[in-house]
Length: 213
Image 1 (cartoon, rainbow, N blue to C red):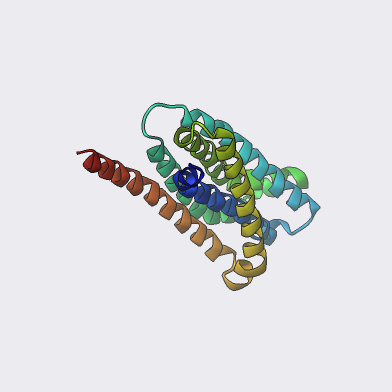
Image 2 (cartoon, rainbow, N blue to C red):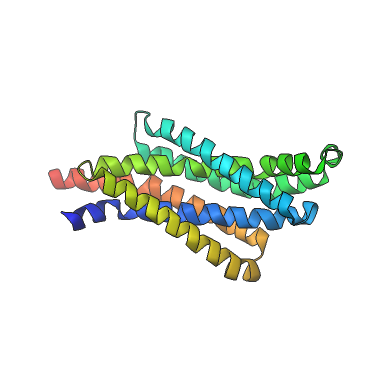
């Protein structure tokens, strides 16, 4: 029974692992991208962490509501992954625009950092934050008799993914890829996950239906 439950939630644990890694990658890349225009200081890091935490909070709240809507949940997850891919690609253009916006330069320093960060990174983190609650709903539906274990595993794998993403980005990706390529790779990863959630559930349903016949 235990191995069966683990098998049913494996891809869900992998999903939150990758989204956790993605969230920390966005956070670390954010500090480097805005450093070009705003430098690197306590103010900029405060803006980075505050905006990303705000985005995660808003995204979690929205994701919880999306999880309770009727209809196939994997399809909604797929759409949010595709939306996240588009939002990640938009980071580069939005950052360049905000860095050259004259009206932002006239603001006091903390407010300028906060608006710059929000304009560039709030939307991607909101969209990425919607994923975990929907995946949690899938885990509960698949393991109704072990909801505590299923949710606990999701939290654990999300945290492990965040740690992995921090070390991978800080120690390897930044030096070998650079910030722009990291953002593009993040967008590609989100698109692949969106494609997986669009294709795999219908295939599984068809196989189950064929087996029933």
